Image (cartoon, rainbow, N blue to C red; front, side):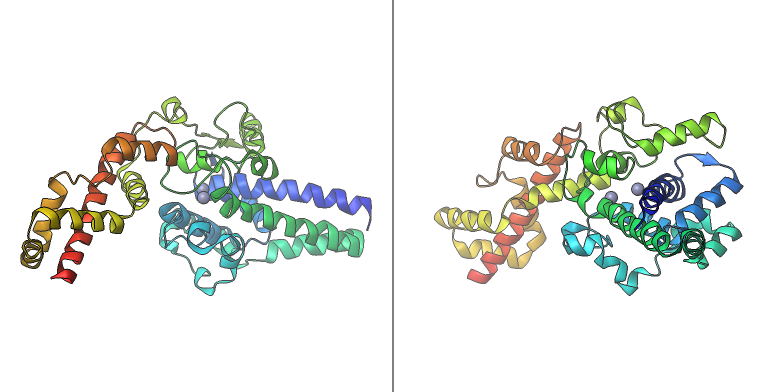
Length: 352
Ligand SMILES: [Zn+2]
Ligand SMILES: [Zn+2]
C-alpha cells in the first residue's frame, strides 16, 4: 500500500462527501440554493461517483424520510427498525429500490438527470477505472474502494447515529440530533436536529461555532457565482421561538401521552368508580354509547390522570424548550384522557 494511495483515498473521501452533502442532500433533496443547469449536472455526476445509487433515487428516498421521520413509514429509522437496519440493512431491502418518484418531479423533468440516474454506477465505475489506469491496484483498492466504504458508513451514520446519539435543541417530532463529531466527519451533516428543524436552509450549523465545512465551500462558490440564492434560517427559527406545526405537535403530544400508562390509570379509575357507583351503570353506558362515555370521561377531570403541571414537567424532561410546549401538553392531556377513558370502557365491558 502506498502513502500516495492513502492521500488519494482521503481526498476522494472529502470531495465526494462534499458532493453528497452539498449536492445530493442540500441541493437535489432540499433545493436550498440555486445553480446553473451545467453545474447541477456536474454535482450529480460527482455525487454518483460515490456509488450511493442515482441522484434522483437518493433525493426521493430522502424526501420520504423527512415526510415520515421516525414513524413506521420511515425507511431508515433506528426507533422503528433498530440501529443496524437503519444504518445499512434498509439498503438491501428490495422494496426501497423504487421510491415514490412523484415527490421529485422537479428533478425528473431534466432528461440528463434521468439518464444519469439510470446509469446508476457508471460514474463510480469510470472513477475506479481511471484510478486503476493511473496507479494500478493500490490506487484502485485503497484510493477507490477504501474511501468509498468509509464514505458509505459516514453517510449512513446520518440515518442511524444522528437519529440516536446527540443533543436535541429543537422539537421536531422525530429523533434527529445534533452531533458535533458527526458534523466534523460529514462536513456539517451532523447538525441533523437543526436540519430537521429548518430543512430549507443551506447552512446546517446554525451557530458560529457549529462547524459546517460544506456550507463554507458553498459560500465561497457563491462569491464566484457558481451557486447563488443560498438560504438561511430566520433568526426566530434559530432561537427556537417559532411554534411547531400542527403535524409535529400531534406527533409529540402522542409521544408525551404515550409515556404514561393509560392501562394502569384506567385500572385505578375503575376501582375508584366502583366505590361510588354501581359498576353495571358504567358497563351499560359503555354499551350504549362508547364514544359518549369517552367524551364524558374526557370532560370530567379524572383525579387519577396526570395533571397538566405533571405532564408539563414530563414534557420538559422529554423535549427541548419550544413555544408550543403548552399546546403539546394540552393535546397530550386530551389524548391521555381519551386513551384512559377507552380503557375504562374496555374494563367495564369485560367486567359486566
Ligand atoms: Zn434532509
Ligand atoms: Zn434525518
